[in-house]
Image (cartoon, rainbow, N blue to C red):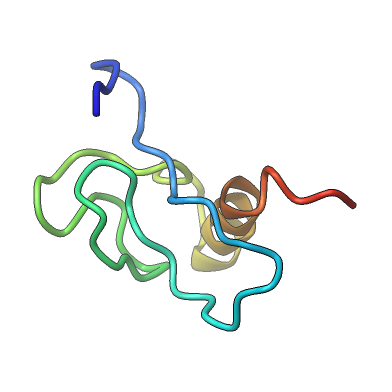
Length: 71
């Protein structure tokens, strides 16, 4: 998959019918915790990396992971 340099990696989209809320990076498809700012495998920044708190980072990443859900 091609990634634009200078832009943070997204979170792999979650399905609304799934039961797993673990978030995975779009660049390497590895699990990422809210405390981590970068991908644990390649070190690329992940969306929400510039947020001031873990809580805000979690909100931004959840929004990104559920971006295709009909609400």
